Length: 104
Image (tube, rainbow, N blue to C red; front, top):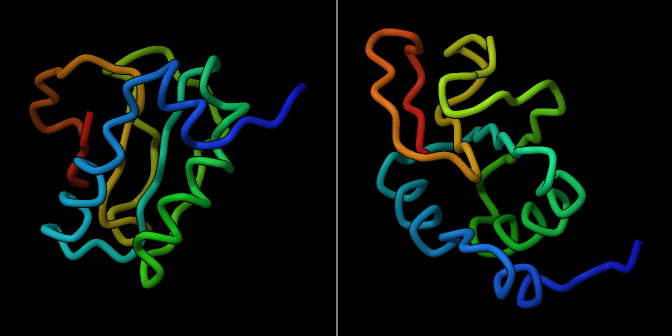
């Protein structure tokens, strides 16, 4: 696989990275879990590198488990993460499925 730059990936996918940076700052999140659909997983570390450069005091984690759509929130404790960011999903009303704030 050819390694792509964040600029090349952003031309193919609307990642909304500036929106993510703004929300992470607003939420004062320190530990953020990123959930990617299979098509974006090969680029996950490139996206994390970009976000870490912009938000050096935030720890980013990549969810490597399954991802079956917007209603598939990782089963993690709210003690472990401040924010979950799902890439490639449409907004969905989660109700009380997760105590952790979820950005879609």
